[in-house]
Length: 176
Image (cartoon, rainbow, N blue to C red):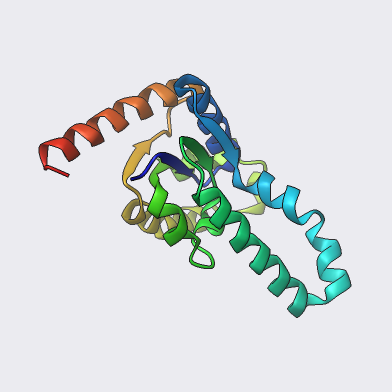
């Protein structure tokens, strides 16, 4: 039985903030996968310099898998994970077994407003193209999609709770 909720979003800080707030509201444990990986692995640049690129990447990948397996075994947990981490090394399969995946969908226009890169560094059309391709993968892989383009984190939590309730009502109606 799934007892966890995992958030993915192209803006990791937004996802972390929303996940943490929802965890507080639902009295659930919150974990940021990137923080766990950094805690377990330490300085990955140092690992790569000591072991070399090939062996260092292999070591990092093996330990990432261990961390993800461990997190997937948690119960009653809100998980925030970068999409690139979720879709690597069969991590998606591991997380999906114990977790409902919620995609916090954000428009390219909103991303360019909130992102930390300079507007000169990226072409808006390139951003929109990349977003469109990624968005389809995230939508298809998620149990629930919540459009958060116009919401601050606290308001997004309310919308997410509503989406979760609608999801479970639909599941109950369909006999799942």
